[in-house]
Length: 490
Image 1 (spheres, rainbow, N blue to C red):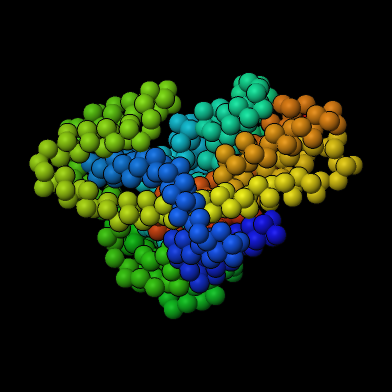
Image 2 (image 1 turned 45 degrees about the vertical axis):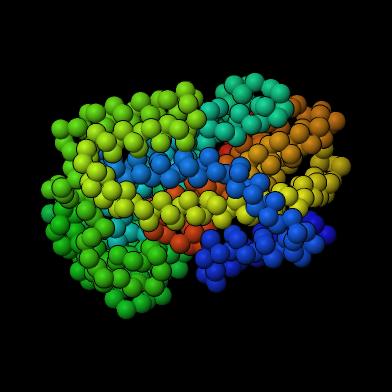
């Protein structure tokens, strides 16, 4: 019964947020509370929630101060050269911009932290997507998949968890998987290229002086939710019109000026067409600190290096970093308060989402539903599939790492799969390698706090992101799995 209720709870959550019948925060809180009562453990709801909040409190603290830190870095102009360089390279071509998103997310993911990756990637790419009226869910989807592939680095989390759970060396898991993971990263870039071509056909391109290069084609699919062009089926002003061009020039980019600015939030083409969202590129904004550029750059490098070397807990590092950034760049207290207030919305939205997710994970774990779901999945594996436990583990890693936390999968389910594999002559290392192939999908799980940073900063509805990314993330994971089997790694 707990197995059925567990799957029903997850399915109810996903359906409601994708159909936009409930907000993610409300769904994360109310649905598990309801199912906790249905299970007959309503009296323990408080204990489950406190346990969940306690486990995620450090993550929430890290995200709060990380948003303030990177928000200040955006304000003072640390990422402006990156934006200008990418714009120059992309030449205002949607295809190049989407590919650039994948490459930037992959490179920044080397620090091993998804939240940091998404903050930097969105900070750099968001203005470009907004100016060209491109689909913001393409940006969030490509960034999440690129980060998911790179999340398999030994210091990224999943590989270390698999090594710890199975008592093997993380290097023995990761190094042989490099060819398969490289194929997966190439698959993400190729997918970005295809999605970029589709965006180019939909919105057209601009020359750097703002002159239109081509007229946009009518939207033919509804999958690109969050695009500035309005409803795919033809909302008011959703075809050709005046859009904000690069550098303030205006040209035909597909989608009216009215339809662009809030398409990411509602997908209905409504908005005011203002350029307020692009102040991050304003070369004359008062928050710029050009004389402190190298201080801010060195501070950021030092912060990321300390994170990788684990010199201090990540929340502590970001707390110290945010305090230093505010004090040095804005020595006057009113200016510091103004910067904190400017980023308060993001802080509240993301931290609120994390604590709401704590209710979901707390109930899922505390009631025992997650354990029953995992055991049911393992028990349903036919005996004849025993010699193929590497393949089975890889396939199971997709739904299991999506519907439960990495800790739950790697410490609760993986040892059982490894034991079953050993009984059929499949090595523990093969099982461990197969277990990390589902990470491109995992990074868009509603149980991953970093994904709320991604959708929050990009102003994309979580349901829209989920509806867009799941199929592509599954495809990427299957490519990695197939490459691992083809190369004899799994």
